[in-house]
Length: 288
Image (tube, rainbow, N blue to C red):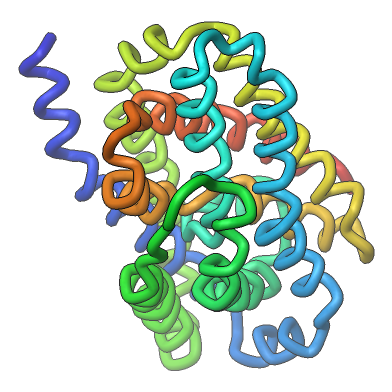
C-alpha cells in the first residue's frame, strides 16, 4: 500500500495540471472576449465575491473553530485546527473552482473575471487580513500567487480564447473531448489526493471533520444566499468560492507554522472541501 501511495503522490502535480488546463481551455472554448468585457462591467457580483472570500470566509472559519476550541482537546491541538481552517480560507481564487462553476451551470465568463479579480485581491489584501485571524507573522507568497494565476489561468484560458476566436469550428468539435479530459482528470485528482491522505483524516478525527464540513457548508450558504443578482450570479459566486488555493496555503503553513503539526489537518480540510464541491455543483445545476 505504501508503494501505491508513493505512486499516487508522484502523480498529483501532473493530474492536477491536466485537470486545470483542460478545464480552463474548455472555458475558453465556450467564452468570447466580448463576454469577458461584459462580465467586467458588472462590478456588484465581483465585489461581493471578493468580500465573501477575503473577509467572510476566514471570519467564519475563525468564529467556528474558536467557538468550539474547548471541545477540541488541548490548547495545542485546538490551535492547530484553528490555523488549518483559517489559513486555507484566506487563500481563495483556486482555478479548480472553474470546474465547480462548469458543473453547476454557472457563468463561465463571469467566473473567469471573478477569478482574476479575486486572485489580485488576495495578493493585495491578505497581508493585511492574515494577522487579524492568525497568530504570529505570516508571510504571503505574492510571487507564487501571481505565477499561479499566469500559469494556471492566463495561459490555458488564452489558448482556449485564441482557438475559439481563430478556429471556432475546431473548438466546437474538440469541446466534448476537452470536457471529458477535464472530468476524468478531476476524478484522478480526487483519487491521487485522497487515498494517500486517508490516514490524516483518521488521525484528525470525526469530530474535527464535522467542524470542517460545517465551515464549508456555512461558507457556501452565505455566498449563495448573500449574492445579489440572478440565480446564475449566485451559482457562479458560491461555486467559485468553494475551492480554495490549497497549494498557496500549504506553502505559507510550511514557512510560518513549521512548529505546529498542521499539515494533517490541512489535508483533511482539503479533502472535505473537494468532496463537498461535486454534490453541491451537481445539485445547483438543476436550480433554474
